[in-house]
Length: 139
Image 1 (cartoon, rainbow, N blue to C red):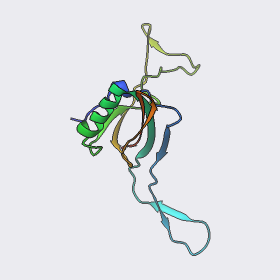
Image 2: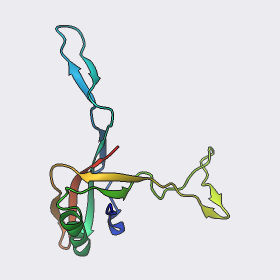
Image 3: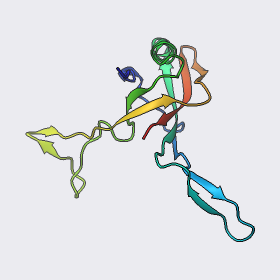
Image 4: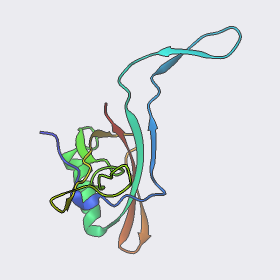
């Protein structure tokens, strides 16, 4: 069974957010002219840089998830896409769509693995910590 990202740890910071696809190309050697490339592989993962500020209890939850549940980052896990999951589904006019008065929400889940380097931690304010880490969203 694939573990789930802890729901209490879904408040990612905007400044720490960065996403970049893996480069599936390999450069062909040219003697002159512009560079040319060919595909090296077809399944492209996306690298995501994340950070979140946590309390002491949430820090313990994160540490346990990383160290125990994910075996120090070597096990895959599922997490909600922070840019999509739980946001309202909008009409072409930009209005939220509903079903019997209940808003329809988008749902997107990622299959992930922790990337390099291992998560780092800094103290923000006495009992608050910033966890900074990278994940790979698998294709």
